[in-house]
Image 1 (cartoon, rainbow, N blue to C red):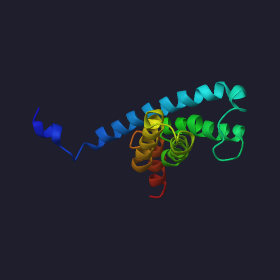
Image 2: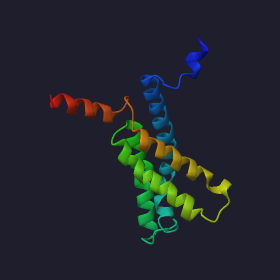
Image 3: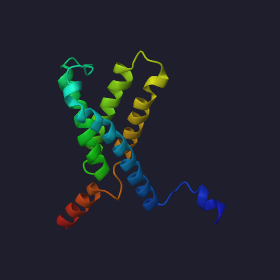
Length: 144
């Protein structure tokens, strides 16, 4: 193998698409498992969950569950990926800047990392290996 293959910054589109698939499945699954714990303990959390936006603990919990469960599933599938990333970025931003705002960085770095990873998904989109791509392909063939 030539050293140029390792240093090539032009990339292989299919390798990039595979990396985006891996990223989507990895962060989507991790966030889904994080949200699943909240969903299974909904009754206990509904009255004590932090209310950073002033709508009540239950509403705040439902909003973060929407992001962490529903939007994570969409990201794993690559369906409406960019739109699904927005609630997750907002949720992690609220966790980082508001919920853990006064905490040391070590206590809030996971929220910051997740916010950054979902921002990458927002910018890059789902890639070729996604339901978004299938929908776009079907739409293009319908317009011909």
